[in-house]
Image 1 (cartoon, helix red, strand yellow):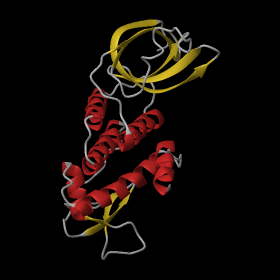
Image 2 (image 1 turned 180 degrees about the vertical axis):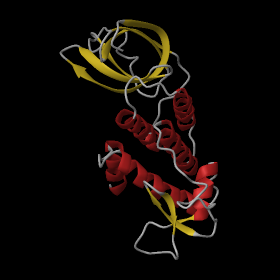
Image 3 (image 1 turned 90 degrees about the horizontal axis):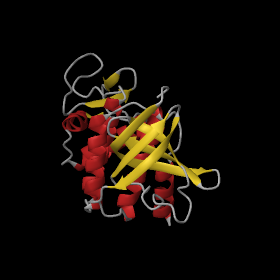
Image 4 (image 1 turned 90 degrees about the vertical axis):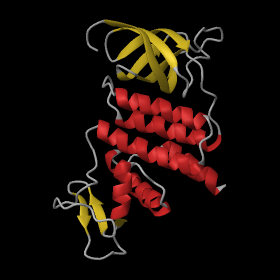
Length: 242
């Protein structure tokens, strides 16, 4: 937003916040109509600040801001309520979502569909979805995120345009999509065709599809993150090791 602007009552979620000078915060938010934004919350670190306790991750907010340039000034924040605080593995899933959005979404690029899916994901996490449900929901979110960024996966046809065969084996290459393997090669990341079909449909009743979809999405995310390690995943692994 190069020209001076003013926005009132915009639904948004806090993705990340960090200190700015002695009493303020820079708050990265994911808004419904403007995408990822950077806002300066003046005086938000003061003990008596009216918004100090509002700028929490995973809580629905209504924000107003004004100004021009890359970082705008937060004018007002109102909590919209309704979501219990996340805990345990659900909390790490939430941090994972936020980190993906922070690292992959360009600023001021609206993604209304992704915003709605993000809010629905937080609600299910807060309501205590099971481990299997969380895995399924994360795969759907990752796939939708890549689609929104223009990196949609080709899951219905292989690199030669032939329909995916459920009982065949493939390897997924960034520039080509699904490449049919003459036989399952132990040295390559082989994926059964049924997994690609299930990922396209968003159906993960089969455990094999869940495992292979997770491996595929992890490879794709690592590629688009250009080798950046996600801190949420690193911390979760460390805690599991303990």
